Length: 361
Image (tube, rainbow, N blue to C red):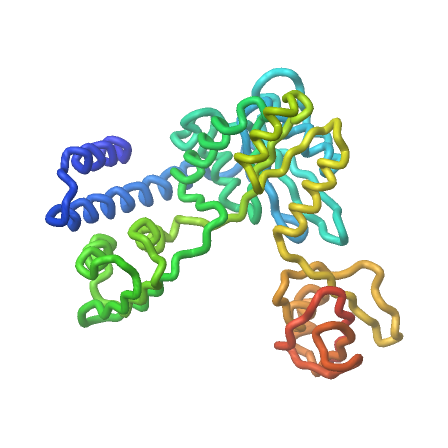
């Protein structure tokens, strides 16, 4: 199937349709058809991308970060500065032709960082092995969009478009849409949004949903609804890294700082900017440090790195796979308990710098 051709035809039909209340449902249905085709296209391309060729890298550490950008924006040098891993770099494009992994050891956390081959325009259509690169991006916990200071805005817009086209939604929460399918009966819709019920039901029907209880939250847009029906969509945090700031003047730097208010401005020749980037990466994951205490009373020097909201059962799973099954109780010292040495169960929620002693059978 020529997905692009069919998508273009539907988009052309939308452009040629006069937009008013009478055509709203028709246009919405066309958009649902386009979303469905894009979903099928993504799944087809992911199958074609596969692994191998240096693109299939085993996950390690407490989180995975990928460096995404165009050729020659300084990703390889950035990997070296963050991890000490030597990724081949040179003053010409396409130096990196495979995925180069490194590890950022920071505040007790081991964060895997992958330097990916540079993307080119239309990478989402397979150019420059774009399918393979973007398949790896989908596995990340954090995307660093690395752009060069002299072309930051243009590169950023292109990267966002390419990632969006392959079903990657950055810095967005999963839409507040819940669907519970039933074997029979009509759709029961609990719609708190501004979307028209008939438009919602048409989108559901287009995606093969005809018997279900459906809840839609109050801030859900039509685009959100279509995304919620697409299991190929992934939601990943991202940071914009404006690199090579030593090559732009002060006035341009200030202008870019006003454009990318949450961006991280770095240069390999300004060490303090790299420290800021490391801190931003770490804080993005909302990690907590938890220290274990042995039955001899010795407190571990190296903390467990867990996500905020972690429970005692997560400590058990991190220490030994059998510990949760044989668990009796735990003693905790720290902010999460009412008094030092409080006895708690598996579902006790921990806080940063808690000390945990586990007793098992």
